[in-house]
Image (cartoon, rainbow, N blue to C red; front, top):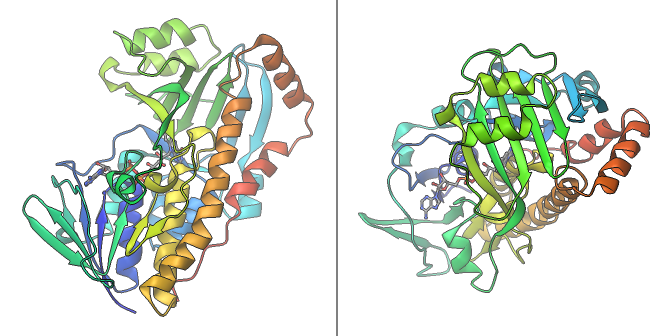
Length: 385
Ligand code: FAD
């Protein structure tokens, strides 16, 4: 079954969806509101499920080559003691790949390069879609209208299209934490590939890249909309006394490189990921808290699954039904698990609860962390037919 699609949104999810659709022979136009297509954000970690989805899309090798395998790391206390260590080699043995870390801009560039330039339309905001007859969908925008067999709404956590399809849905809510992050200006001597350090209602983490630079992120319980006059100075005040290499990572950061966002999620699960000829994908469908590092991985799974369903089902309607049936339970359960991981990890602030958690983690048999990761990362990718 060939066809044509308009993908709304040129983030990781939208670009991956476009790549998948083109691989099964569909004509695709990606419409992106921003004038330049470059993902903002610092770094990203991809679990085996995300990499396997990228393999289905034909870009896994390119991403592996540009990413750093995260073999060593784990969770620490602010004083530097280890709560849990992780061995990426075990993940590699079980899943074929450990977690990998890559600058977001690099991942975005690799996805863009897998698409012909002509299929990306930038600086164009989609405000609505309509279905004039059962088999078609129209996407009007400032300079005209596009018609297609399918619209993929990959327009992010604030998805306008989701709001139109499910007007009664409450939309995203504040997850209780705010996140500051940056990529170091120059390489930083690091003993591990990645770390998470949990204080009380605060987390600091890093992901190392192939060139020796690293992304760091700091997550803090805070009222929504909290902002700091000098974000880097605030990070030094909050985290400067934590263990190495945290002060070194902050020292290697330019003040204007620090990004600051509030964490939002779709706490109320959507009743469907599809309506008429429209499929919601990525954060538009299941924005989750970042505590499991699975948001983009789930968007990549969405993209591979949608392409496989369209390649193998007899009609667009049956493909969309399969996409909804395969993706909604899985991504919504990962979102629940991410929220739970946040509650037990970074968000926990009561001293007694923190002490109990830390004791539990120290006493837990080795391999618990690996098993928790395997639970979400051991996803069997679909075939494109
Ligand atoms: P977006 O990246 O939000 O893209 C949506 C695009 O749509 C944007 O380009 C936007 O400009 C465009 N758009 C919006 N509205 C319109 C419109 N009306 N018309 C046209 N275009 C429009 N995930 C992981 O897998 N691993 C991690 O390590 C990880 N770390 C994270 C750390 C943090 C702090 C956060 C906040 C998230 C993290 N995530 C991680 C989650 C991941 O970033 C997201 O799940 C992923 O980027 C979602 O991609 P998307 O394409 O669905 O949405």
